[in-house]
Length: 193
Figure: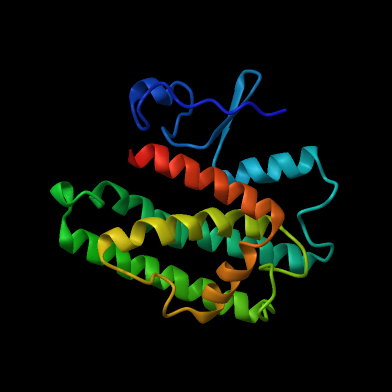
């Protein structure tokens, strides 16, 4: 059982860095150790609970899962997280936001191309015919895109990316993803109020 605890200290603060040296979430505490980074935590949990597997059986499929996860972390979430403080018009620096949107769109373009090259063809899942760790990376990112980027003036964040748009529409019907998305909607609602 994994217990979810909200941080008591502000993210990035010296106090929170005592919990997770990066000052970021998520952070998974295991006895006296802390693992950070979503991808690392997902891999750790997959290693603990390998059945049913969230990794394809073949090496190329596993590499595709890792590739999509890395694109999400490095090229889409990085600029997206940099823009979050600018959601408020009061703190927004328009040129900074424009530059981050350009970088984020480059990441989305890379994701679009690599999903296509990896064999995605209008299916429910990013790699293959079942839920993988790639979906675990994509679903929260796409939720954040859909719920934050419009605040910055981009009404349809996936309009230029038909593969991503199709995937996003289909993956939301997966029973596990639907549960995660319901929790994320609840959390976002609480955060925004």
